[in-house]
Image: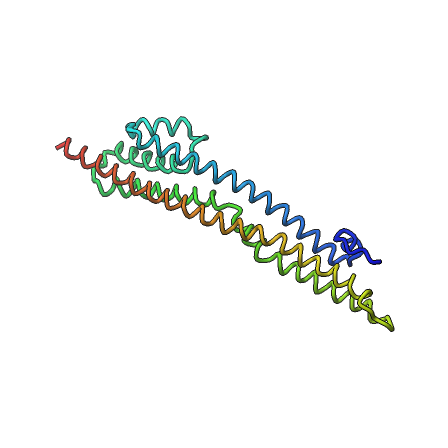
Amino acid sequence: MNDFSIVHLLLNASWVVQAVVLILLSVSVLSWAAIFRKILSLSEVKSLNEDFEREFWSGKSLNELFAAAQQNAKLSGPMERIFASGMREYQKLRERRISDSGLLMDGARRAMRASLQREMDEIESNLSMLASVGSVSPYVGLFGTVWGIMHAFTGLAALQQVTLAKVAPGIAEALVATAIGLFAAIPAVLAYNRFSRDIDRVANKLETFIEEFSNILQRNVGAQSAASR
């Protein structure tokens, strides 16, 4: 009686199918590691952003928040770093005796936009890898299956009498490659879609913060200009 367990089928498969399965299993392990890292990093990003947002709207002055952001630069989240970039540029321009509100606001916004791009590049890291695993793995598995079936039928060509019992093991071991390809691809695709939605929410929240902070800076610039007249 033939043993159709996956381990037995793989041990008796051709070296090409075994190599394909080994590659797919390695890729699956890497994608799961990336998924868990991304879950932890996104959770940390959301928590740090929420903590800073509460501080920002708690009534503290911008200078106090900026001093705290500089002290906790290594432990701060994306929103706090974006805030610090805007404040840093704003204060540099003020130190140069620039009083034009348009120049001040343009400088602060450019600094925050550049910081936002850096933060999003960091947050989106490993997403492309998950997308590649999700799109390529099924085809790699299919290649292993096609090769395995070709190998099985080549071996049967020398037989005078072919029965299902002789054909089934070769086809079964070939189909394992497709199954493992799907095993690697499906979690990667699901994780990619979920992370993409979460990252879009983070990006929208940071964009909203930039606009709100810009409005506050605009009012401060107007108040300082009125006071200096």
